[in-house]
Image (cartoon, rainbow, N blue to C red; front, side, top):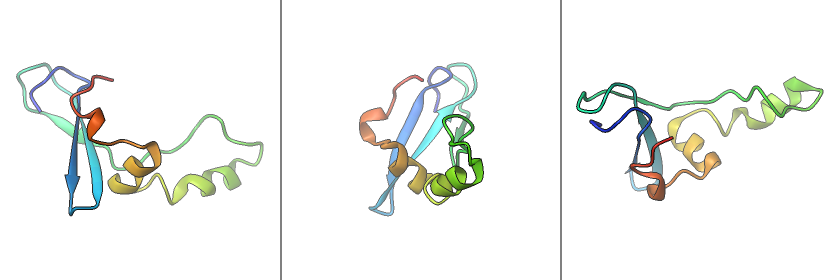
Length: 80
């Protein structure tokens, strides 16, 4: 986690889930955040509550989030 800011560190846990950390500090400083959830704010239908609830179960929890966004080891060390 010492790469440049925006670098993704993807890893596989419990033999079932991917998780992703994003580097937040300058290169050489070990600091990153685990992306645990996302809240969609764009692309929702007119009935935002229904659209939000549709994604709520898939975007909460680091494993579910990576599955929903199709994040895998091929994204490891990519800069976003």
